[in-house]
Length: 579
Ligand SMILES: *[C@@H]1O[C@H](CO)[C@@H](O)[C@H](O)[C@H]1NC(C)=O
Ligand SMILES: *[C@@H]1O[C@H](CO)[C@@H](O)[C@H](O)[C@H]1NC(C)=O
Ligand SMILES: *[C@@H]1O[C@H](CO)[C@@H](O)[C@H](O)[C@H]1NC(C)=O
Ligand SMILES: *[C@@H]1O[C@H](CO)[C@@H](O)[C@H](O)[C@H]1NC(C)=O
Ligand SMILES: *[C@@H]1O[C@H](CO)[C@@H](O)[C@H](O)[C@H]1NC(C)=O
Ligand SMILES: *[C@@H]1O[C@H](CO)[C@@H](O)[C@H](O)[C@H]1NC(C)=O
Ligand SMILES: *[C@@H]1O[C@H](CO)[C@@H](O)[C@H](O)[C@H]1NC(C)=O
Ligand SMILES: [Cu+2]
Image 1 (cartoon, rainbow, N blue to C red):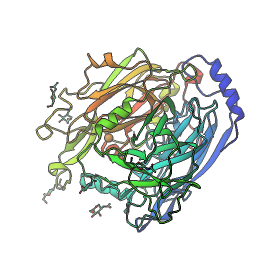
Image 2: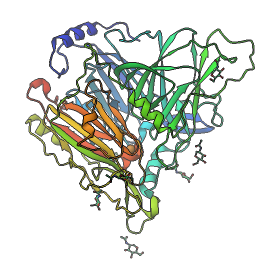
Image 3: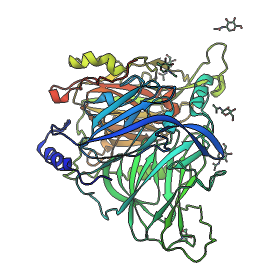
Image 4: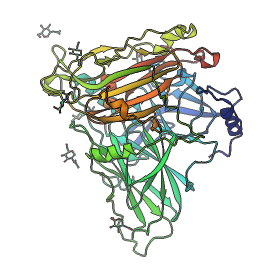
């Protein structure tokens, strides 16, 4: 960990001086932290299977990026494989630096094998735990890691943690993950499931050959630890709990929350959660307490329903009984289908909303967009066999548009318009094209086809935007984690069933709603998010379940330059990969 950063002082002063909402990159010269990422293969063995795993620098999970609030970050990424890649800094706002955001064909073309691209951006007014991951096909299954931003000011909660432990959840496939995606897209059915969930790359004792591949963290009794929990899994939301210990939630998605205690958490792919844990239990005869993650299952599609287990090992308080086997039972872990628990847990999240960390939720809005987030069932192309439901194939859509990825970077294509501060054409439908009982239809009777395209949503700079995300029961109502690039948002309301524009806004929380970058939209329900569109660029909005992204549950969102020079997209970097 770095020592206290000089730049923190400068930044604090700046933040106090700048009263406007839009704090764009500071003019002082920040400390620059440089990292080198080699995307490369590495032979890795889990569950008795040895395979070439795609990694950064041979590490799985990948290296941790740790910086201070206010730092400038430069990550030189060299692609040393014979495939394309890109890396995304998930949750980093990328103010004016959309070029460094990472999603392939949205903000950049892919980094080809043998090529290098250096991502350069500032970490402005953000602090906490985020993640980085590959944003090309399903590479993020193993190409991911923690992105930690140490705060300038002391933590606003007590007790203060005395140490911290990163906890990264992932999924392990015995087979080749790229082949899983290709096969899914070719045959039109659901993807093969992962073979295990992992904690920091280790599956734990409930899987074959894995007792030796178990995450064990030594802890001292009577201390408070901060767990920096990251869900880097690609296909399921997860529940997480630690036997006999309560978790105190203090931050989600790198935003402080009002602290609350809970026996377990629910965390969706793309989300991060910091919890405090105090080692105040009399040790079990083995000296070990299990921690476990299981999926939170909301769909009836077959999926990985296994459990990964790791341990906290109390130091120096082992009993005389050396043969005592640690219990792998975690009594406080919810059942895999416990939607009431997930709902109650998410309902407790509140922004801290103090003068030092004020809420910035738009109280009034300039525009409301209502979009379905839906699975679809499309006729099989002629002369092909499809393995989706009823001989058809699966897709997914937003407002009945299943996203087709362009062959050029959308940002690059529009760059001239940004420099001219033009308002770019908005063609994404702002209401569901067909009104129907979104969460009540008989899935078999309905026409579940979709349209294909990449019409973007564009709004003027500074728009106070509301987006209502409405799940549908086409095929399967499901919890979808929707991630917005380039902006944090406030979750002002959510519920089950169909959103009602007359009634539901009256129940919005405009006082201390949770601020996040990824919202887990309730299964068979809706969420309303609000934010000020104040970051010029083209941004990806998408489901963070990888199969849904592949099926098209994605949209592009465009914010043009603002009136001031400091509200404009910077020019593209010289080494930006070409298409
Ligand atoms: C990399 O991307 C380019 C452009 O989309 C494509 O033509 C090429 O086949 C890709 N390379 C590999 C190895 O997939
Ligand atoms: C998916 O699973 C099926 C059945 O187990 C297997 O035959 C197939 O090879 C798997 N596909 C991939 C890409 O791993
Ligand atoms: C942990 O909790 C379980 C279930 O509540 C209880 O049976 C057990 O005694 C506890 N273990 C310790 C070491 O306190
Ligand atoms: C997990 O899924 C398998 C296959 O679908 C099923 O047989 C099994 O009962 C499930 N296990 C749990 C714990 O839900
Ligand atoms: C489908 O197969 C039939 C018979 O083999 C053939 O006549 C027809 O041209 C094929 N259609 C397409 C679109 O490939
Ligand atoms: C939608 O369908 C559900 C379930 O069939 C039903 O309970 C609900 O009343 C319907 N809503 C509307 C607005 O028709
Ligand atoms: C979606 O588009 C398809 C293709 O045009 C159409 O058949 C279907 O009815 C539309 N569905 C909805 C819900 O708008
Ligand atoms: Cu989804």
